[in-house]
Image (tube, rainbow, N blue to C red; front, side, top):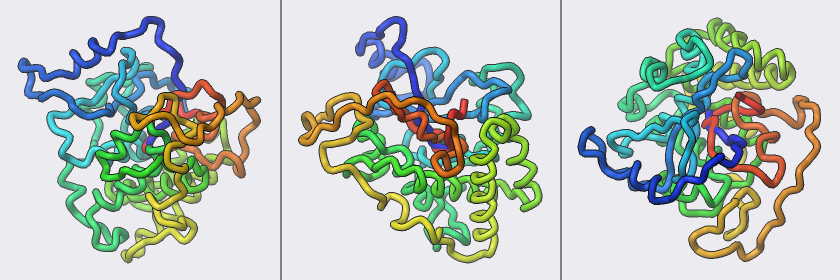
Length: 314
């Protein structure tokens, strides 16, 4: 679903002018200049031993390597947050696994994936309390992805100008489960087939059996509640998505660059590198694409992301 990925420094620095040149208007194709302070892309590398195949993310406007292809739509007026959620869903990942051969998720493969059309999000669903799907998805994507001031342009695009959200593993786990369950319904997957789809993620299941089982159980629990045909409110997700705890204004331990408004008023010391521990259900409820392991240490580059999963989902 949404992702936060560790990245290493590139071998060669790329000048800011080169980035801006590539994002400028290209008259040879029907695309205007990309004027947003954020980018959307996915991880090209996808091996059979990885927990997930499609790892999509939103990241700050910066240079990326060839293994991080970018999505630059003709217009960003559509529900880009819903596209990210869609690309991060288990059901979409399952479809990708039927197509991809080899270890690279190329543009050609991505174009073949059964991504839902933008018009889908103008509709409502029984569990959305008469709200459009786009409006139901937005707060969940916002809280999952906006955990650093580096992602403030993305948050503003989603209509939020507050400080970043605190990384709360339990809340993230529940919001991802809601999104995954919703997409199972949107794709018309029957209850028995939900088990089939989830059980096909054998790398995830074998490497983190407790986390996998917690993830599967929660998705199914939410799926069945949504199937009852009435508005759904997760009993354990209090306060609601996008109303979770935030860092005090001007501070965020995951921010690596100084915000445009100046340095934090109460700077937080970089987290010290922690010794990696064995993963267990209580402290690694992530599953999917967002794991606490991915934000330990002071050398973190926060993207976004698996808009919707957890752990070392690679």
